[in-house]
Length: 99
Image: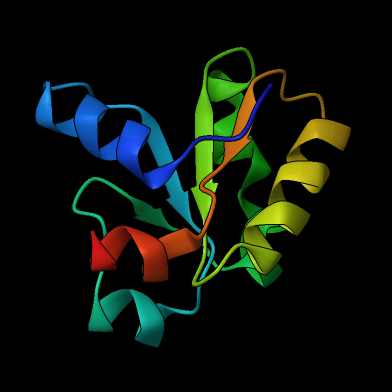
């Protein structure tokens, strides 16, 4: 699945959509600023949370971090684990919060 731009995500959230959002930053980063509906699961904790996310395997999941590096890794990992529709937020929270 193609990645998602911050503009597209913002438009969807403003339209009332509630996509599955995972913030793979550390908890302290999430506390400093976040997308309201995002669930914070640090990249290093993702393997331990797979069972909790199992219901999302065939649904759209959007991952984000500060700028896109960690979320790219999260996308690759989730895809390897059988998730079929994982999208990375291009530019991450840095770009999202600037808009």
